[in-house]
Length: 449
Image (cartoon, rainbow, N blue to C red; front, side):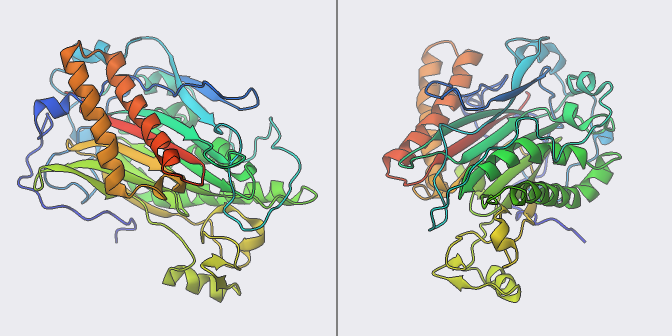
């Protein structure tokens, strides 16, 4: 029995594996190669934390199939795939503008300040998370892990993350996010069939910023700690359970920290985390932050927005039944008339009323028709529908691609296209009078060929 909520398989014309995108070459070239760029830090105050790690060159990934099997079963084991895709070895140096050097791409940010609340109540809280707090972490052997993660394996889609956040009309900023294109050093030694593990996550805090900050600095560590042992086949069997366990540990550890404070912290946060293992996305989410995939439809000859997450609010039947069974109630579309999400990390006072930290987990296999993943808090989705966000981002990418065609299309310009699109969609959400904080994360997807 398949434990995952796999996305439906779209109709396609053929099942033949491809080495190039099935759409035109000009569209293919709009997916920028190379390393990820971090957003500009201009305007950030000195109190904001930025955590960075180091990693080597991109691990390229097992090439997916264009056409059929887009969301069906998981991809074949790495042992069944060629060691190197044709033509990749000659272009390894092009994967990064700093080939052979370490590059800072792993970071966590808390935004421009603190974030607005999802509650109707105004709660004052004291204290801050200890800088040396190590809850949720584990000590594992990492011998040879970094060296192994720097290998270039043929047939991999290359992922690059870009982030933009805006405080909007709120007095404070309570969003946080974390991204790393190489989580393997954190995990430690893995089977050779696992060639890439990446992680991208956005957290939308409410009632304070401590839950979102804690999740941004601990969830990925708990995922790394609980990462399944064995080859890729075993990982595929165990990863959903381990993701759920990582969410539970993050929630429990934060609540222990929160209840130890006087007065206790009442912060909570939504979460959407995308874990990429080889060429497969595993998406875990709580609350109303969303992730979508921009995919080219062969049938419609256009890009479409594929939803990767499911919102959780108290008005949904299953959510309401769980809340009522636990002794809670739903009033004005909110738990106990206050909290507007039915699943979250933190929110200690509402856990006894049916608010759960168990995420929905879905999986999706990358294909040659995929252009990028868009992850954002509800500050974006209040002003953009999924299809509208894809149209907006693509329009910016197309405009810049036309300009790049007239000039030389350097890696830096291609990187800049996605960074610009990420910032502009966040700005547009604020311009359209989103009353919330806005955090947008774009993860570009490039075929190695």
